[in-house]
Length: 288
Image (cartoon, rainbow, N blue to C red; front, side, top):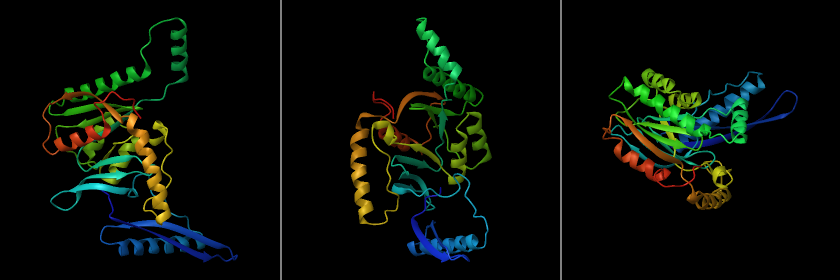
């Protein structure tokens, strides 16, 4: 799981052959010390400036390959000292559960096509009962999961409804997010391709625990972590207080059903409790 302990930013400025000033900033990370992160950031900024001056195209990280620069709110480490569970705050302010071996799966609903919208309009004009697209897709995803486990009786899942789709959690065993068989399972269940890439790149599964701010009438967080100064910290805390008040009327997901093998792996019991409590999945609240 890529959860660095230390982050540092380096900014360098040089002058090109035409006398124009070039400024470049970059963040880097480390697990051993803040000094190590600062040294890595400065070295990376130095290389980038040299490449810019030399006309070399800068490398870009593939989505999900660079560790996410998120504030770590809590974490639980295994016997080897590596984090097994980490609760972080993402760039727009939502709380996220990062799990090294608990297979959370994002299953988004497809967008409603123009034909589908016209069909719904005519059904409404003619007074015909029409199952909502969300209800239809929820049923399809649940059937898809049940068909998947029909030939895999050892598997069990908890299924949740989210604002824009479904969330599944494999409860009968532990999974390696970078293993080929895990990636194949995610693909067969039609998980979001970006989510699959993120899991593989970060070495963990992720599940959002709190609502997206804009879905509960709150602006997203604009103060990047780590805070650069005291003013940034104060601005973040002001935003956080508003977000905490705004999300009280919402849940992040709603529990739908447990399917397949009813036995829950012992390492997952406490995490399921944490997830369900934080997401308020058993409360009758609108989703956000």
